[in-house]
Image (cartoon, rainbow, N blue to C red; front, side, top):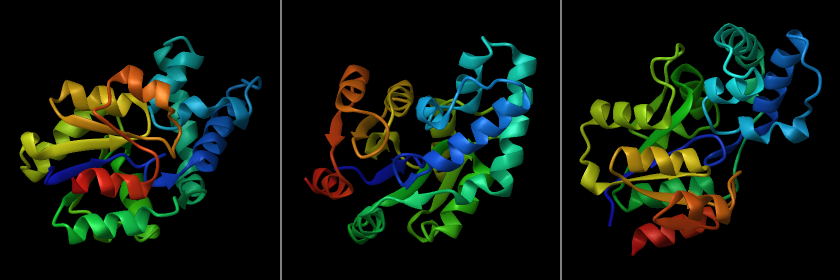
Length: 214
């Protein structure tokens, strides 16, 4: 069906809620913003930090840049480890490897951190390449990361699918001319993926394998 599979990281391979929201709270508190708590920062999981902080600071670029610097201060120290691999994900990746699929990570998280997480949680061995965002604003949107992943590996778009848990994964795939699959065990729900136009929807990692086996 598809030879090449691009996987989002946060909310798709790992549950990174604690690390992301703790980092966001650290940055916001340092900047005097105290109205948020972990329960209402779900929107930080998945999208680029420029988008998430942009919502809070109404697009004020100086404040957004400052917030991202503070976020990464916490994240680089301990936020990246406040994370866990979803149940069934290693088995899913191994099964797809056994099927001869080429697996690539395509995440809006900076590539430096994405590679560190993949290695730490023993996921790197399943992937031929980990594509992430740049540390500046030059490559943050999912479509830009997908294009970078494709250019770096030389894979054929016609044989490639993007899998992720949020609508920006689906939108990014469409912008790049790829098919897409939304997963429901992360932070996006059925309504979000349906509205975004996902070509396939999987409830569990096991369902991902079933769909890609057809």
